[in-house]
Image 1 (spheres, rainbow over the protein chains, first blue to last red):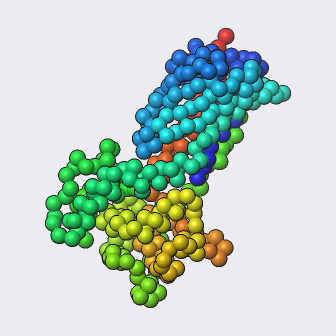
Image 2 (cartoon, helix red, strand yellow):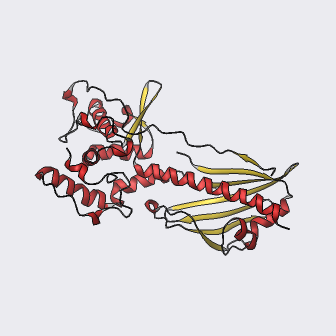
Length: 172
Length: 153
């Protein structure tokens, strides 16, 4: 599984100018997203991203400035739910301008963690309710589908068990 | 805009689940457990998202198979490794893996002389999609930074 995100771009401007755009709250609001960022080590700020509920991530990204080394390097923590990553911006002056590299690391292990959580009952509704319900049904041949309120929040489970409606159960 | 992008590594495409060739079981005596392992042939050819619900339930209902999934959650492994620590034969483990494969929960790939098994629940696919989207997000934002720099005084 892919372990990190790594994006490099070169801008035809001096590093100081790119750095200023990376570290001013006003500039960040213009090109990144609105946030209460301040260029101070230890400062905490938040913004929104797409939620990933299976890892407890509700979409609120909680960041903290971990390192500031103008105009070369800035590190943020980038966390939410079970996701705990760091974002590192590195600036390098080149003949063409400034090469900016953004690396977000800390995703490795999340896939395995996700699976372990599911299998170990982090999702008790799957193995704790739905599965016994299914097994009981299979044993008795009853044809009533389990109540829909037992579905995962988004209508399907993480293992894809409920991706199809319950009727599949009866079709065998 | 003189802007260069270094394409990051993109994840390899996955084989669609449930598309593995069905194999004739070599000797049904190796068939493990009390669960109904055999999948009726009516399920063959279903689209990946349509792997029968009943099969997934049945596949997950067995303790040995859940154990195998947990092993695969840590790393891709060949049968010879998966059998370690289990009280059953390698043939029996292979049968369990076949059931998991047909339920779309694992896939197998050949590597040298070994067949490696790989976990493949929907959750992981969603996680990959989420990561891909995050990567696109960064690309888009850093492109926007280029536009911002061009326009800003």
